Amino acid sequence: MIRSEPGLEIDGFLIGELLHAGGMAKIYKVSYADHRPEPFPMVIKVPLMRAGDGAENIIGFEIENQILQVLKGKHVPRFVASGDLRHLPYLVMEHIEGKTLQEVMDLQRESKTAFTHQQIVKFGAEMAKAIHALHLQNTCHLDLKPANVIWASGGHAVLLDYGLSCHAHYPDLLAEELRQAVGSPTWISPEQVVGIRGDARSDIFALGVILYELATGELPFGNPVTKNGLRQRLWMDPTPPRVLNAQLPDFLQEIILKCLEPVADNRYSSAAHLLFDLEHTNQVKITARGEKVKGTSIATHFKRWVRAAGMHYQPSTFPAQQIDRVPIVMVALPHQEVSDSTLHTLRQAVTRSMGIRPGARLAVVTVISPGMGSTTEVENSEIEVHRRYLNHLKKWAAPLELKNQFISYHVLESFDVPKALIRYAHGNNVDLIIMGAATHGLKLEGLIATVPIKVAMNSPCSIMLVKPKEAFELEDA
Image (cartoon, rainbow, N blue to C red; front, side):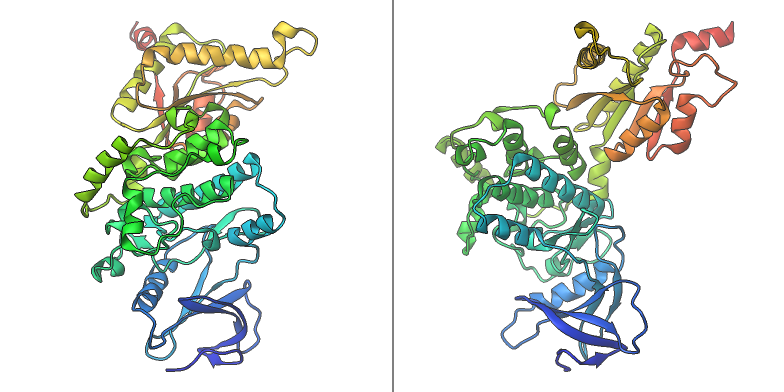
């Protein structure tokens, strides 16, 4: 078999400078051997296949070769070419120039300064966006760690290394080899420890480990090297982050510990839900997790240990299907010229929609005109106007009685109502918009394209337009 080294020409590529030598592969700069210009900077990744290397190296190469070719978007390196296993297995892909999160963390540690909670939230949000984009393509990363996250020049996160990943539409080669607990010990999820692969919430757990280290400078479960050490995360939970960092806000502890729940059902239902909390931290619901300043009791750990002893493999739902089951629903309420009948009909539509979607979260949104607040009158200041409309939204939603489903309220400012609603839906990964079929405050229906029509024409997701009962009665008269 051909050995990789700088200067080697293979399949029309010229191997250049060695950039990285890891435990499973080497990465070199690469260019076209005929010196034609590259469409973008490229690297070649060559798996290690020495006598003492495990079979995971070559299996990982096959998995990454399979998955990287079908993934799209800015959060994934672009695939170029791959080599034959019989001669020299390799992957040529886009070279993402920038620092990995591990490098950023190492620099911070060297400077002996802590990350601010704003920095942690920003890092978390960018990673959640990348994970969500991956899950929408039915892929779980399953090896998420700081060294596999790189910050591109645009400021967005790019996820690297898909050798341990799982795509719902392709054979899971690692599962077929019956290799349990495959992953990086520090970040591996409890379900991966017992051989469950393909659950999108495993990536959420790994992100929780990363956020914990960013917030405290310590690892929540240490760096275990034995099977028993790995299994402890099936029933143990870490020291509350605020015990280690008293400056950490309660909402951030809430988010981190929710990601780290031992049982996947108790974590965020999707990366989109996690992203929503990271981008609306003022509306994070603080539970006992966020207020916790003591470790979990021995009795609780014992109950978890008993349950964990019987855990076994269960087939996982496709990541995209998991997302569909727990959507983010947005209801748009007009802030003026709206009848009680319309508000009642919207409430009925939301009740039905949320009732058939356990785990969904609801965003109640209204759009007001900029400048509605006064700069001289305290009682009509911008803050008071926003507070007044937030109270209106909460009053409207009170009869919904959404016991175990999350609900948040948002007052947007814009002269262009449709554009504001569409931008909000797109930016917050909304899956369904519910709004009235009336004009949202306009009296020129029939003469111009109304707000609902404009939203429906340009919506990034499904939309439900509801018509109040009184409108049907008028049509029949």
